[in-house]
Length: 197
Image (cartoon, rainbow, N blue to C red; front, top):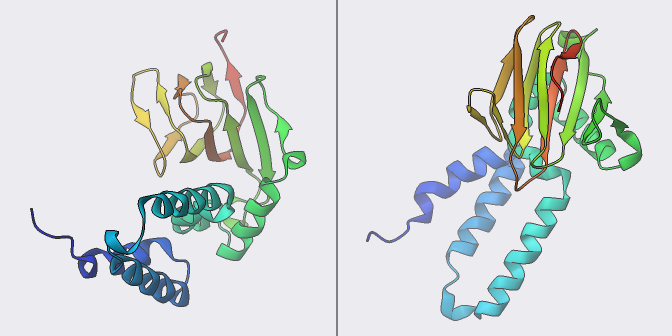
């Protein structure tokens, strides 16, 4: 087996996960420093504790969506700073509204000029739950941020995937069982449920 060469992947990883040149340089330096730490320098329990703290911090931070910022700035026609403000607002449960089904929650936001007049925001769906057969009365664009779902033809859509539904299209969705689903959504018309859950 060939040894891991951090110099071959760290700059690319830093570029994909940083939102500015300064952040990219800082992340690359930290990753290079971490790659030089050998297992004999750190006890396994310390590694496990550090990993748990890092994962917990990332999971609770709105920055966990930073890898999607390039797509989201175009999707909602917002700046990165505006997106950060939106995600900070979305962390407050009081900002969410009940959706059309008990396991669906809605978060509305004002997008930029390119999506003016359209319904824009996030949709949160409970893991393992269905979204029944429905018809789109207008266009709907979705970008999956967390979790995923299968459509009625068993196509899977997961984090980073886009799913565009045209006016008049019909389908049903099944959320994956292991994680709640978070979608960025742009909607130009109503959704009509034509089948019972």
